[in-house]
Image (cartoon, rainbow, N blue to C red; front, side, top):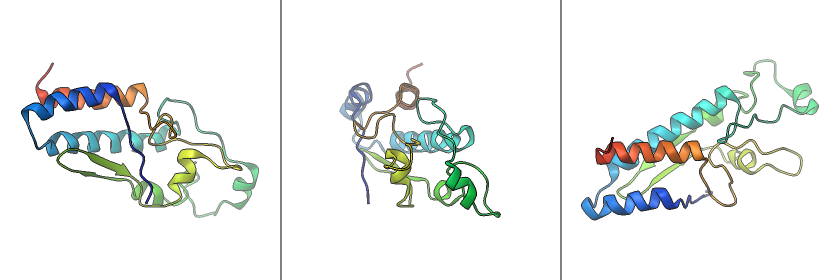
Amino acid sequence: MLTVTIENTAVTDVLTRIQRQVSDLSAAMEGIGQEMVSRISGRFETETDPSGTPWAPWAPSTVASYPADGNRSVLDRYGDMLDSLSHEAGKTSVRIGFGTPYATYHEWGTKTMPRRGLLTDDPDAGTLSPADEAAVLDVLNDYLGVP
């Protein structure tokens, strides 16, 4: 299993404030998980990475080998990867990811395939995009009752 840890100062600061008041953050983590799964699912529709950059189009070799019964969408041959997207909320963290091992190749790219990011703005740094950071902070502020 691959683990990418997101370190985000703004999110960590809010979580630290919340943890001073509440020891079980499961509800907030569940909200973050649901929000991020929704945002990641949307990337399959828009065919864009977390920063909004369009995914690279298919290589000619991919077009030539694409199965006739496929979905004809980038990263959505049969829907297996998207169907495997899930989250698991705990008391102090949330895990969000795919059950298909090849999702890793899309997140980072390979020598022969461009990166088509889904989870992070920068997988090596483990950073959220500004829009994803804002969405997570919105969930946490809602949890705190902050307008």
